[in-house]
Length: 152
Image (cartoon, rainbow, N blue to C red; front, side, top):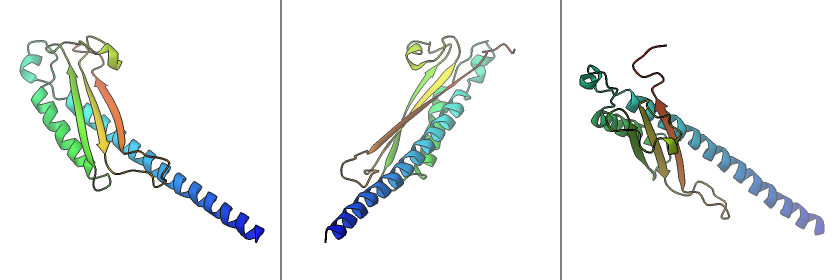
């Protein structure tokens, strides 16, 4: 009987480990997918330059175009995640017209246009074990123009 109880305890323990590792692998994959989506959004948003102001020598990111492209990409990214969840985004643009206030806090070098995108996935609990609760994943990305208008 003692052998049976020890065996049952080990089965329960190892089943918990197996469930945890499977859930952790799924969580890490979702984090990677969200990071990839954030990088795609930041890249696309930063490349939406205002051609009218570019002709005047200013590097300005078109806010309407950037917002539209990030909305579309975030909606496309939503399809790669479990049903019942949602993806929201925060877009911040830094350029010659909007200024560079607050860019240092995000690790962005002043004087070079940049787009900062933060994607947040909110959904059902991603772990099946009752002791671990995670319903939200947040990943961010920055795309910054390297040299401005001059080429090196």
